Amino acid sequence: MHHLIPEFPFVLSVIGKGAEPSAFAAAIGQTSDPVILSPGQAFDLPFAGEPGKALTTARELAHGSALDINIVPAINRRKQLLIADMDSTIITCECLDELADMAGVKPQVSAITERAMRGEIAFAPALRERVALLKGLPLENLARVYDERVRLSDGAKALVATMRKAGAITLLVSGGFTYFTERVAIAAGFHAHRANTLNDDGKVLLGTPGEPILGREAKLAALEDAVERLHIGFADVLAVGDGANDLAMIERAGLGVAYHAKPLVAEKAAAEIKHGDLRGLLYLQGYADSEISESMD
Image 1 (tube, rainbow, N blue to C red):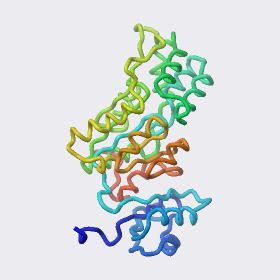
Image 2: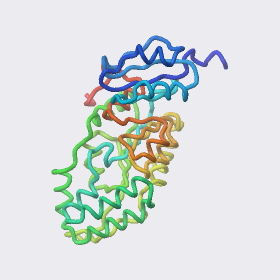
Image 3: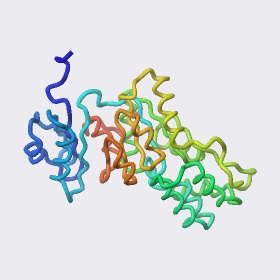
Image 4: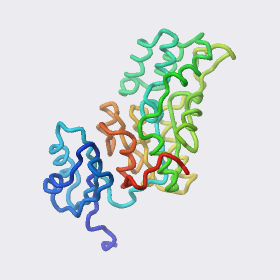
């Protein structure tokens, strides 16, 4: 079905302050007219040619600037499922590290978190090790962390609301804890959430997570379950995260995005948002400012 292949099968997506198409069009060649998604902030440049070479050329051109530059296929850009990590993606902090701060063990816990997110140590034993350090922490500290420390990342509400209005299903998946995903899912507007649990005696944390632990493979399983349930393909999925335990779902999704991510994740993801906020995930799908909303109304 050769005639169905678009004249310009790829799109160069440029996102960031001062994004202007002319220099990029000249650099990569064989382009159609640019599509301005957000004046001075985001544009699409449909093109024909070798995508890897074009991406290298465009990123070299933008070297030193705070522009997020990616290449995506022109077809099937708007995804029907959003599956997102929570900590340091949909929210700005790591909840476990903040609980550790309340328990007076943040340096020890943060060091383990960093190594796990970089993929240097396996997620499940790292989680058990960190949770053990929280043994005896009074339960009211969970509410304190949520109220005092948890903030939605810029663009989180816009990302979820806009995709929902377009008919997508939205799923929050976390190696963190249901106490937080339940509240963050409501605050950001997600349809559903999955995470780990913390065992307690009604007053304090017992220092153990519920088993089995939801980590890298469980995030991938959540994606696969949703694809099967919704009768869609992996090409219809947008997955986003920042750490090593997000890699399996990022690599399986049609559009896998590393968001302000660890080097290992940025290197392997098909797309990366390094400078901008979560609205960038909408621009990657070709949404213009006029289509972006922060509410479901």
